[in-house]
Length: 477
Image 1 (cartoon, one colour):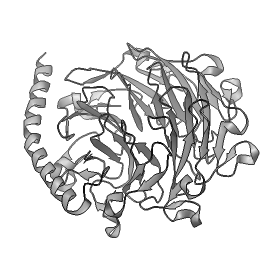
Image 2 (image 1 turned 45 degrees about the vertical axis):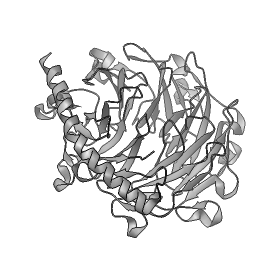
Image 3 (image 1 turned 120 degrees about the vertical axis):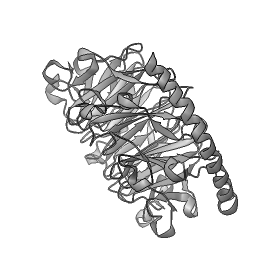
Image 4 (image 1 turned 135 degrees about the vertical axis):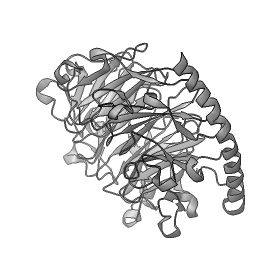
């Protein structure tokens, strides 16, 4: 009880403190927008001073000081109405860090004491002690806000946490083998799973029934049923439990275009699952059983789109070299793929009835750093782009991340046609050094590799691995 009271007092104090900084920040934003941007919709503005980022060491006073943030790799914010908290996975700290989020501004403050992080070894008493967190690389929150899941490639495991949905927002790893699922059961500490070698990412169905996990080293997608009350994961039985490139000796269903599969997305209607596979230079396409969660890859060339058609197995696409991350915006009309090898974003229209995707024609089908000889529209801040995310509810904008360029690129999206258009001038990107005047100047963006848009769409949070930081942006509506 005393800890909860302390947490509540910290929240109140923090909100009072940031209220004034928010007023100042908004005033600055309005002046800047009014004078130089003509209120460009979709622009991102980093908060000034230490409100603009939280890092492991405070970055020489530029950021707020945090902990368990070495090698930040992913960010999650529960998709529920409260919107009070943000959670971060840190591969270098083998940890999950937890933050209060100020509703009025989106500024972050880390929880105090061991509530502020859970790590593999407790980090000398700074964090709560956890398990199956070695190399924690990806974090996801269930839509109901009850559960937090962490993909840890060093543990070949998914760690499972219960979340307090009240004002506290604290997380606690489930006890016993309910607390994780790993490739080998981790000596009895975790439940035993399969197709989990080097896992990289995951997605949770909107109905809360299933979790899908990508395993680049297994060339597979693992499929789990989720207990919607407790959050416990149970891998589906038999070949329904995974789909892999070669069927994994009969353990998984046999698929294609899954070499090094790194990312997975679910359509908002729950009917389709899409996977980006850098080793196949492809996007794989699956029908999803809404009751069981089982996946079935579409037949023939409908089952994938690849850079070269994969010898006739897939439909032929472009700007898919090293296809690394896939995003499915909420209106279900589009699919976007970030391809670092092409330094491009590939754009597809989605058939809502069948789940099929077709790349847009001509230069509308992709945006790349150099236009790819006229095949794509010409963009900027896209060198090595490896991540793409939409602007949540409204879906009017797309944000991409490039760790090579230390940048985020900003696009306007046409929900009807799926066409992307990068914002003009410095509104079109934010980078660590402003990229010679092409982009707005930001901070704590070295090795930027992941971003999340808050459920209400007012903020964007960027995870930057080399800055050991989370950068905080406001998104004027």
